[in-house]
View 1 (tube, helix red, strand yellow):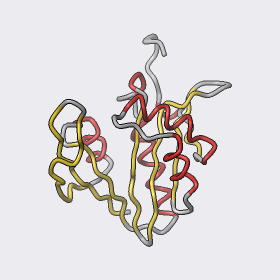
View 2: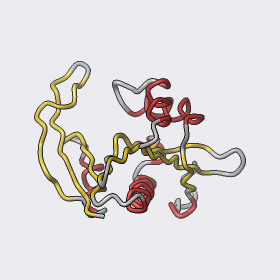
View 3: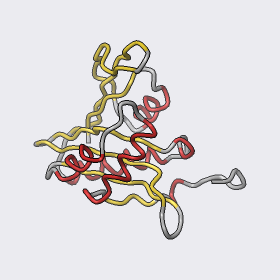
View 4: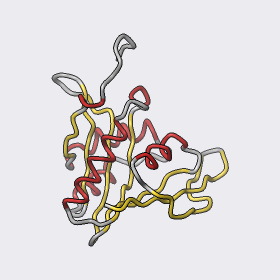
Length: 161
């Protein structure tokens, strides 16, 4: 991506992600998170009948995956299990599009609330969720282990659908 023109997140395509996309999602997850989820674990989640997932795609043919969201539905609740946007594409509205897409899918599946958790030191993500209407519901102390560092608390959020 060049700096010549501002990026418009409306040109991001959200595509349903299935088991056939596990390698691509696991690759991007590995670039963003430690510990990374394996291709096998992503595939198992995408194979599960209660899962819903999207990939954020940009460009012409072939399109490039620049983000993903994986969620699960249970009864009248849904939970975002992981969400990520490639570093070069962050702060451009793609995360918002992914959250909105999974929230619509959960609502169509008759979920009443959408839950997630985020590392307490991830200010950009917490701002994204607050702007999307999520409210903080709790704190899980020392939830995220950090290689070579102290564990970080998780902040839990919920969105009424």
